[in-house]
Length: 112
Image (cartoon, rainbow, N blue to C red; front, side, top):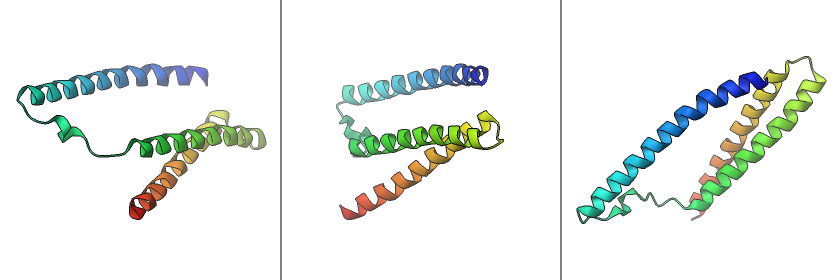
């Protein structure tokens, strides 16, 4: 289990770091060139309030934590292999939390 997680983190984190560095570098260059041309850089602001992101990530982390807890329960009470029990519950509850966030966010936007 630990070997598989180590491989996933190694091969997943290196591309993530490279992609994020390229994204932020290009974004900085675009905004700097807009300001140098005398144009307004608010073009890139999408107007999304940040409290929605806080709710989204909070719900996702709670869903992942529930997935870990229930993965342990599933692994202890069934014949399911440990990696399958944990991974399935983490993905299931992470997905459920994002679907719930979508429903809450849609209702919040409708109320505004």
